[in-house]
Amino acid sequence: MKQDFTDITLVVDRSGSMESIKSDAEGGINTFISEQAREPGEVLLTLVQFDTEYDFIHKGVPIQKVPRYKLVPRGSTALLDAVGR
Image 1: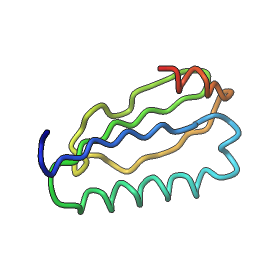
Image 2: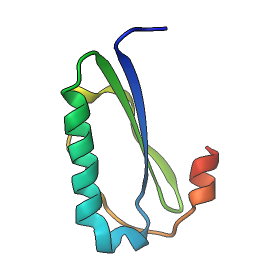
Image 3: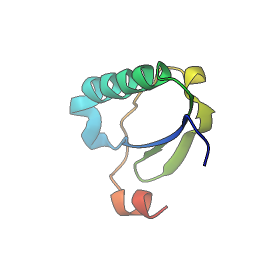
């Protein structure tokens, strides 16, 4: 096992129901990413967002290279499909 290695996966709901908390969700995600980027060791981030579709935004990217996340709510929630992947 690799020492000082963290592999983080975020699964983000971007369905239309997120519109009312868009700002809070973006802020929380971006704060989390910034805090993790300051941690020692290698940190990789995979960020997936879903609504009626499931999209990889980042896949195993060094967290220091991840730009600020922008949430664009749309579509319906397909949580079981997203988790099943």
